[in-house]
Image (cartoon, rainbow, N blue to C red; front, top):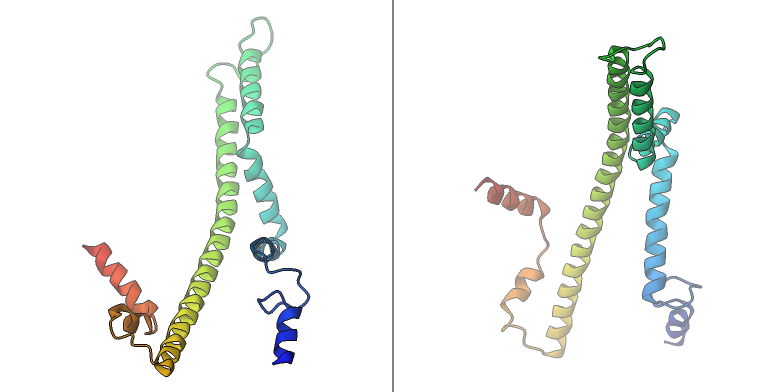
Length: 186
């Protein structure tokens, strides 16, 4: 018993030796760090072309991008409308239209590349969430079963709780998915 008590005293109560305190702040800090490490690992696997596409997409989503285009279009149009000088792209600004169309094609491609990466990360997170939720469900089911056994051993009558038997059964994700699909079809 003394060995167990000394082991508990050396941990934060959560089985992490050497940690100072078992506060919620410590737990959330570890969780945030774990998520950041996962994201960093995913970002380190990106190819140089994906990194370039991400930077371009990030710039395109900024107000700086808008102002650069406002200034560029205004300058182009004003320069090509000024009388007395040779215009490189007279009205109706055919060359400007070509450049803007090509820019739109490339920008949409860069944005799609960036969104595809974001979708992959999101799918990975969703899968991780599902695995953690399933593990939590299995742990909760096991705890209910253990508590039922303890209650039975000490003579507590739980027969009045009609939900307890169902909660003590393992959740079957396939059946839940099937129920959701059936409900969505209605």
